[in-house]
Length: 219
Image (tube, rainbow, N blue to C red; front, side, top):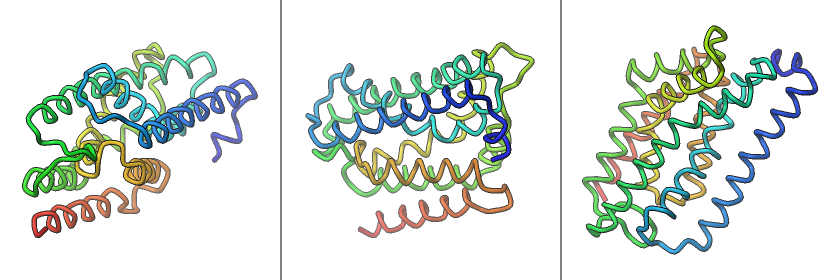
């Protein structure tokens, strides 16, 4: 909040632009969720994952971005999203392979019990890991001013993928275009950034995911 009160009009315009970009990504995702043809072509799948990741990952990064000088803001956010675009390509490739092998149903979710439960368990354990805590400490800091803004953004994006990449795979369990799941995951990411570190937001999220894994195995 202190950083928000100190920002200039120019920075405020950039923040509003970033919020608008995230809102457009969400609007596209809502539209796609209502009328998506569940095919396995790499082009549409990559576009779907890329737009979803942009919409979900911009909001958690805004507290860091508003602390940057105006000239670094856009370059930082662009660099930050670059690793997530690489993640989106990999996710789309996995999605296509799973679809070709009949492991994705018409709701774009993993079939069966064991594999979805394993994904939920992996996401839950990642939330409880020391790596998650280390990544969150790094994510809460603003872009490194000693680096060019683009490189600083790419570095932060890599840390973000390391912190949240496994968590995003939960979408394969809920259904890739599940809007409630996207909203809950985004809320978790924002709360992890904004609430004090002493509050166990990540731990609670991890325990919920582990409970979901157990329930999935039990059917």
